[in-house]
Image 1 (tube, helix red, strand yellow):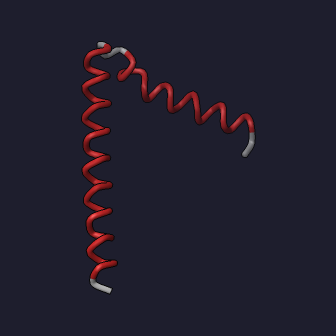
Image 2 (cartoon, rainbow, N blue to C red):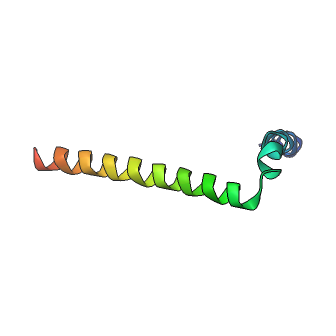
Image 3 (tube, rainbow, N blue to C red):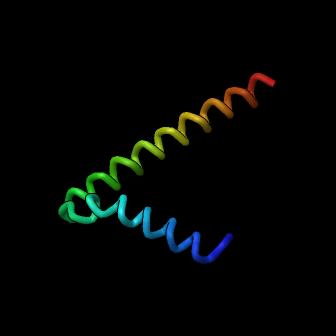
Length: 57
């Protein structure tokens, strides 16, 4: 990928994250925890579905 394009993309992403960075550390931790919990639940659900699919074959 073009190096200049990467820098522009990174700048855009960091600008979008600016409001997130102004949050208190506690709020950031809470949001991260919620995201992680949702990801774990989602993956566990997918894994369970996959297990059932394997068992039914």
